[in-house]
Length: 409
Image 1 (cartoon, one colour):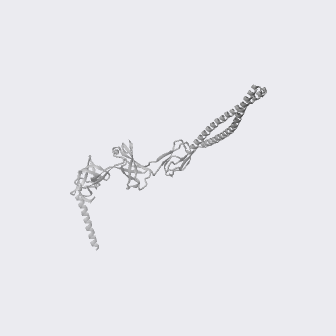
Image 2: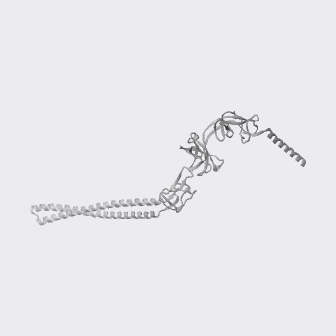
Image 3: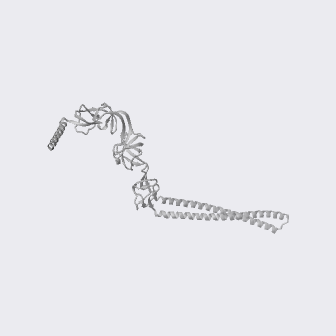
């Protein structure tokens, strides 16, 4: 039994060696082919470099007033809610100014209350004295008029007439004094208006200083993530100095550069395919939301047009700063002759494919239409059903090479 097994193994080795020798010396190359057929094709424009996930709501938070940094309560990557405290600046002199301004407000209000109280007292007193003086003046005038008539007719003595004149003079003087009281009230009124202006000015100054002190507290204007921090405790910041960069991770877009030569094909609303580097092999959908109006100099190409893409319900989180390859669907056709794009080659400006025909590789020049990474439209040069060689990694494949078909697609 052992001998038979040895003999069988030897026969198998001889057969394998004969097969290898046959293919080596016969020069037959095993290839994979795609049988050309008609079908739909989509045209895509690819970004010249990876796009970047950004936030549509991104803000640099700066110090509105200067001061020394007393507290830093947020780090890069911290998620915050609207109104959360991020940092506190300190300005000791400002606190003293606020206290002094508030004391000035209280002093001005107290002076106003006192002036209003004096005016109220003077007003009541003046009204009473004016009423009494007016009544006395009327009575004195009436008495003087009667006394004058009686004196003229000889019924009143000269001394009595003089008394009537004295009473009238006294009443007139009282009326003048009462009128002077009205002047006093008006003067107090002017003082009150001045004090009201002082109160308003003091309040405005106190509120301004209080607002300035409030601005020493740096808070989040909306919910988001701190993506950059440029502040440390102990630093002195001037007005306008950047402290944090805050972004909303829920409101994102992808920004990508398109070669200037392809930019005319891009339109707002076109569908896109997104390929995040973080999720290799996965495709996300999106659409063009904005095309920047200016073509700019790019590091990758001489000129590029930047576009923005909104992702459509991503099935995995697209985090700020991620790199994303972008393909924009700019057109397509429904019924064209197709060839795998990898099988279409070009030399000296002429596109061609290799087809397997009668056991040999045959070069066929083709006229190509629109294409994408997977497929190329063939406008002429081959017919449906021809076996296009796709295993082009084989060395020394050239027109006339003997080929054997390993698989068909």
